[in-house]
Length: 355
Image 1 (cartoon, rainbow, N blue to C red):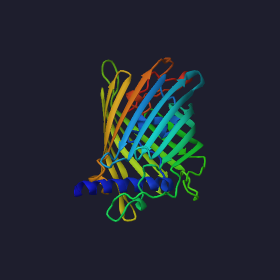
Image 2: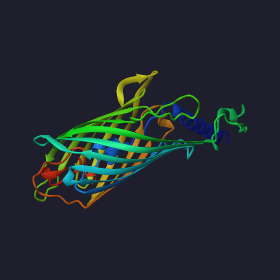
Image 3: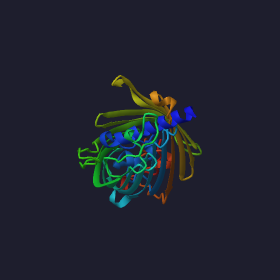
Image 4: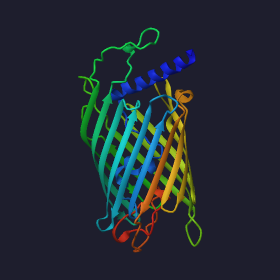
């Protein structure tokens, strides 16, 4: 009984601390399979296919701690070859504390592609978003609601039981790539808006992402042989006092993709704590136009004994993948068979495969 009570109080306190800290030091959702959510990473990936693409992602972060974080993302985009443009729509929901704090976004995205040198292309992109933040304190337990023995003592909250914030936001990006490399920069939360639940102004911090990578094909796709390749990639994010680096590798051998990533900044520390977040293991399967992948985050920080890491699932489906054979430009290296990209006009490549 004592062990159960200790676990309940520990989980409740951790969850409440996380939730109460969010308005003051809020950070955007992070997906481990970032290229399974390409438009969330950067608007420049919008329409990076030979036709239409749909994706669905689910992330369960810290399942070992009660009522923490669950995130969902649904996206669809299409490439319009005659305009060298991609259009997309994305819906995202982040649920913290089993409904206590909920974030819901819906975004419209656009990207344009043009060639700046032989086989080198630039893709500027832009995103316009409508965002909602809902805070429900009806079931929240505050320190003032507990007695010395840890029992529940009803009290009146200083805050309203319900809080709803709505805003419009924007993001912008640019990416350069060729058959062997890609490099891009994205800026999110461009519109400043007060999201605080008290009379103290609190703003969703501006976020910058720098991403890129290099693809090495040790077996080209020809005759009856499938492509085999290794890709090295990274993604660096900075948001207010938070900064993080994801760096990893993918190995593609049809129909499987294997990925191993490290999240953290080696030798960096904050308040005496090393910035070692975790290792990410990814397994992907490609069946025709469908790609399914599962990833597990193995926690390396002090939460390793409590959090049970994170589980993430992604599903991508491509259709209407038609193209004109007016010349081949190769495949963008940061795409996988299930996240195929595309590009426009007379330079349209024969096909695109990620990783």
